[in-house]
Image (cartoon, rainbow, N blue to C red; front, side, top):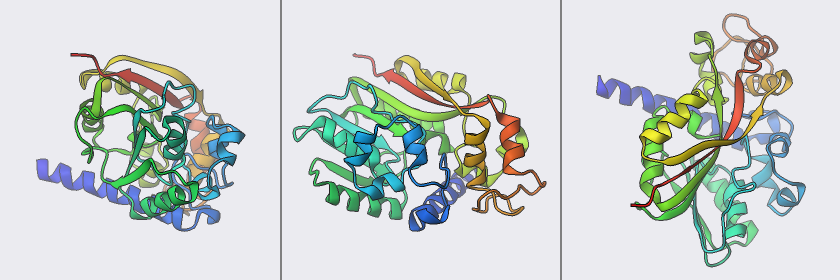
Length: 291
């Protein structure tokens, strides 16, 4: 049974990685997974990034961003801090973090998709920053030393994990005592089973998301304290239609398209209408207790 579960988890990760590989190979063609309407840069602007922040970054980092919030906005990241980004993608947040922590700080991005890692490293080179690196790995088993980072950030990634309790435990492991977490992520309330089972909607950050209550409880079970939601962005029907439509093909669950249908004939607009008020981005904070 355990081997069967592990195999299933591996298939989920493989499908998600392929969706993001497809997206970064052709970002201008609308092949965007997760939280990403097809217009370049729309989501990152909606998600709390300022024009000044975006203009200071390599354009490729912005175009290939699939986030749902700016985890660094209003955070207390300071110079000399060590910051870890779970699912760093093309690098928008690690580049912003690199500017915040300065030359005496360090930023580590973790991603499992080769194309994303290559794109992030290219963007790091273009930025001129020398205090930022990207490591290949999965967020359920971080290639990072225990008690070594001041901040864990993440942007619309943990919802994609098939093993969220392991992710929460890893966050607790790598944080220094007193270290903090601030992540932006998608949470859902009472999602219908037929949507839970759609592979495309998993990559679009909806089908794999858990409730806000479950999310906070999971962090507490991992040993983190001061767990709270600091900000919420509840998505309207148009935004949800963009999420869903980015991954629906023409009647084929899990095929990447734009504005297609599910196998039962449901359109992106119909799906969006059925989940309005049930899907939002939450900015979640937690702290690792001092011994």
